[in-house]
Structure formats: structure tokens, C-alpha cells
Amino acid sequence: MSNPLESWKREHFRRIAGELREAGIEIRVENIDLILKETSFERRREKYAGKKVCSYFDGETEKERCHDILDLNCLLCACPNYLSEREEGGCSIESRFGIFYEPVNLSAGRVWDCSACDVNHSYKEARALLEKNIDFLASFQE
Image (cartoon, rainbow, N blue to C red):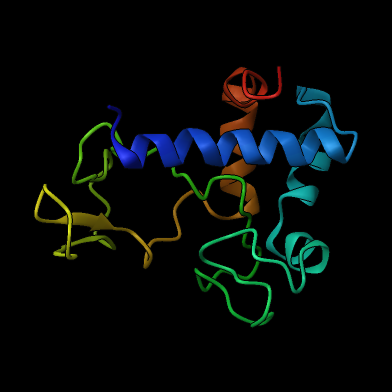
């Protein structure tokens, strides 16, 4: 059985790739600006208002954000620095903004919470990652 965090990460990228396909956006370097516009918090809030498509944004509280970032982008909600291979998670760049906490019903006993971190959630960071790793995201659209 796979780690639930790793499964969630794969499912997130599948969902994003599907949303891009539905919007008619092919995942290619030439389309990075379109990809980032479509995956921006503002666009997703507008598109999914009133719908439960995200566990962090319920579509009802339209002003709520999971991160306090002006140009928040949802593409990298499944952060590439998050160590989802480990049951407890963690951060490969050891961000000072994350902490371990102890939720109920988790066999690892603790899980990494990076909700106070803004690394990789801005337009600039998402763009830089896509420029280097567009094939990773494209693999979920096939």
C-alpha cells in the first residue's frame, strides 16, 4: 500500500493536468503563462465558486486562502520539496516555516505541516519550476 501523502501528491497533479486538458491547455514550455494563469488561486476561485474541489478551499468561503500570498498559485499545492515518500512527511529544503504536529489516527505519530510556508506557491516560483520540469507535469496529462 502506498503512502497516503504520496498518493495525494500524485492525485493533485492528475487533477491539475485534467483541469488543464479540459481548458484546452497542452502542457508545454510555450504554454507556461497559460498554465500559470489557469492554476492561479484567483482563476480557480472564480471557476469553482460554490464547488468542493479542494480540501483547502471549499468554494464557499471565497476569500479564504491556504497561504497568505498575493499571487498565490495552486499548481504546486503538492510541493516538490515535501517529502511525501515518508509517512510523516518533511521538507527537503528544511524550511523554517514548517513544523511537525501530531494528528490523530496517523501511525507515524506526527506529520509535517508546511501551511505557513510560501516557497513554491507564488507565480515566480511556479514558473521557475515549470521551466525546469515541464515534463514531470506533462506526464500526468497523457
